[in-house]
Length: 401
Ligand SMILES: *Cc1c(COP(=O)(O)O)cnc(C)c1O
Image (cartoon, rainbow, N blue to C red):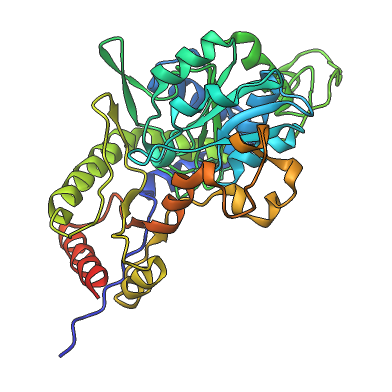
């Protein structure tokens, strides 16, 4: 008798009755777009990360767009970032007319390599956009040190990093306090907590927070919530170009319930990641992810690097045939057709004689390796130990064949 084929997804939101009830509460209140639930979610979120201000928006991509606008990124400006990220990171720079300048990653953490940043700073550099990739905190101390020396703002793409922590002045801080100038979060179902879609901006700068609130709602001078409750007629005006980047109250109500589950989710993910470390350890040549002493990841994804001899797609197919969903490592923006145009991005080479072509850049070697040689394994709150054992058993077979 053949072994029963299991079906193990790569990820699964932990969401249920409480969120459904919360959505119902918002719907039955009669106020369904941005309103009191959004305000409450923002307050609870900023309290969780330990920062001053939080502003909810439609998703993390729009959050990144507003963050870059706030620090003054204008057409032709350069923003230092990584190619090895979800493509929205680089795209948000281009929405401002800016040019992403790609820096390679550290092979241990898959995060931006701080040593390489100074080399690409020019008089056109306007900001540094770092990514806490798959929940692993960046080396913020080293990055902020460079940024302060060059008087550059730092934006944290913390799309995957809610619940991750960094050792800061002797204590564990939540990512998003923020430690840079602005942090941006995502509530897409592939992240740690979800509102379907949704995003959040955190900052300690009151002026920027006010600016975000105007931009997210068409640049409207007096919000609809204020006019709705007024005893006198008020006319709003539109003093600036704004956007519709609102989160709805239905989403925020769900988000508030998700936030309550967050500590338990992070605890469970950290337990499962630790368990992966222990049971995978004996696959020869397989490189496990590692957490620097000053970082606590929420393990949004568990990323392993395959032995050199293994073909990524083949390993993933073997696992899929056994009912296990995996994903390849994070992709590189510079290899995508959307980045084919030479003027849309720069790497360290392009300051001098650029020899690199799309899909093959010697200055982004580690980024390309990470895309081609890593695999993300299933990891979600409801995952059981036997499921995890099964994933490892199949992975082992796939690596050996
Ligand atoms: C998911 C993700 C985004 C985009 O988030 P959305 O909420 O889907 O817009 C941006 N950056 C990183 C690093 C991500 O993982």
